[in-house]
Image 1 (cartoon, rainbow, N blue to C red):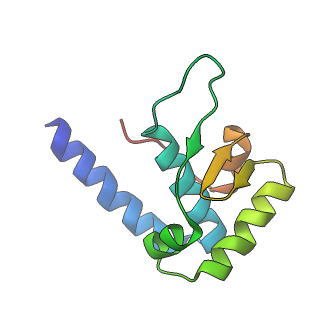
Image 2: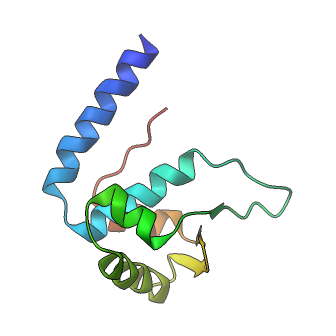
Length: 105
């Protein structure tokens, strides 16, 4: 039953993603990645090890567009980024950017 519920939720998210613009889709993707990353040590920093190309591939867009929106997220203080990683700094702000967000549990 739990597996069926998750599959149904994933399908719902795919339909919702068709209605969202790229920045919202990217925010949702980062938040969903964040749900599946284990928290390291006591400092609780979460680093998503993912490239811009990988994100572009997930969202069916180009690397320059992903870079453009990640730079916007960085300027707004939502994320920190470096070579090969993204760290979510403001989860609540990223949730607002995503439009509508519900995690899959």
